[in-house]
Length: 252
Image (cartoon, rainbow, N blue to C red; front, side, top):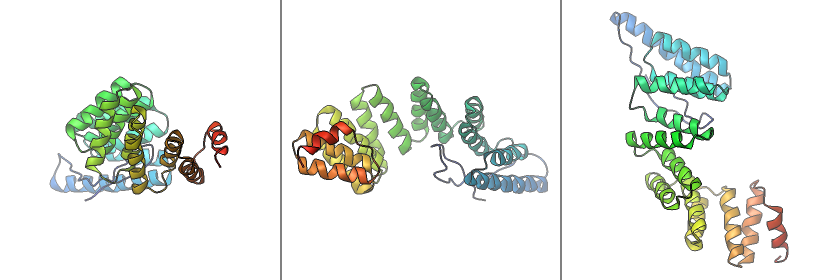
C-alpha cells in the first residue's frame, strides 16, 4: 500500500510513497495490524493537511503502537512537533526514525533543517553531509549546504553545492538564484545576470531575482533595465529598499 510522508520544510510540500511492513504474530494478526497502521497513517496525514496537528499526532502515535518500527510515522511526528515548537520532541522523533532505519536520508535532512533553524550550524552541516552521503541526489540538501557555506563566506564551496542542485534538477529555480548571489558577491556580474535570468526562466514570479537584477543593472548604469526589474519585483510583492528607490528616481 502506498502511503504519504510529511516533508520537512515547515509545510507539507510533498508525498513519498512507502510500504508498511509489520513483524511478529500470526499472518492474520500481522495483516490486521498492517491494515490498522495504514488506516491511521492516512488519517494522520489528512489531519495534518487540514491543520489539525494534535489529531494528526494522535494518529501517528497509534501507527507506532501498531507498528513500533514505522520510521516514517516517527518522521511525520517530528515535523508536527516542530510546528508546535516542541524542539526536543521533534529531534527525539527524528532520532528514533534513524535508529529504525539508519539510511533514512529524509530524517537526517529534517534534523539538519531543525538545527539550522536554531542556529546550530555545526550540527546542521553534519546532518546535511550525512543526508548527501546516503542520497547524493537530494536537491534541497545540496542547496541548504550551499547556504551554510555562503553564510560562512565559503563562496566556492557554496557555488559547488548550488551547481550540484541544478545539475540534479535543471528546473530548480532557487539553485540558479543562489548561484546568482554567489557570482554577484564575487563581482562576476555577467554570470550573476545569467543565473538570475535562468531562475526567472524556471519561475517567472521569482520577485527576488528581479530585485537583484535591478541592483546589478543599476551598478552597470543600465538604468532602464534597473527600473524595469525593480517595478517587476514590486509587482510581485518584494519590498524594495527606499534608498534604492530614491536613487532610481533620478534616472526615470
